[in-house]
Length: 223
Ligand code: CTP
Ligand code: CA
Image (cartoon, rainbow, N blue to C red; front, top):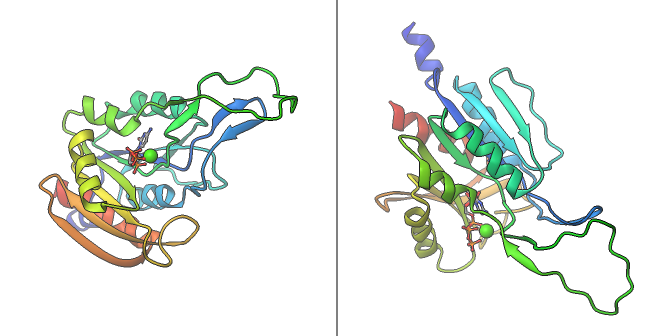
């Protein structure tokens, strides 16, 4: 019994994980998106499941899939759909980890029909999407809430501001400065900052290793 709980330290816990990009429709055949592969979020979901947690993986469009009896994948396309799926599950979860690269803006007036190239110049009016992580922070009870921050300047200050603004317990700051880190690579250079602004700087690691470090924080929180 003791051995089982040591091997499955998250048994009985339910964790919400967001992953991948979102696509925001311009017209029926075009969208605004980004290069997120979804790998970080999927690795987090797999690690949490291996540790015994039930996982709700809310995934934007990606080529990835995972088959694990502890993981329920909810596929969405847009930020609005991701928001809805997250709030359907957040109340029953013990922790949430927002690894998705949610679009910050979406076309304000998506066209019903394919836009024709009749105009010499053409612009698309954009409006902000809902900040899913902030909205979870605003309604959280006891959930341990983890976000990411992707910064290219004033990294620490910006990440700390996100902790406060979004009511987070931990933020994973992704440094893009270093070679081999960030989008399109399988490695990340991250700094963990907690709600007391304590920092933990990590070296270049694989996404699997970063996922394990993040899940260890959840385990330590519930230990
Ligand atoms: N996030 C979210 N919903 C959004 C935008 C971001 O849930 N509409 C989450 C991301 O999943 C990530 C965190 O917020 O965990 C930070 O994302 P980031 O892009 O670094 O910050 P933003 O708050 O979007 O601010 P900015 O892009 O201006 O730096
Ligand atoms: Ca953003």
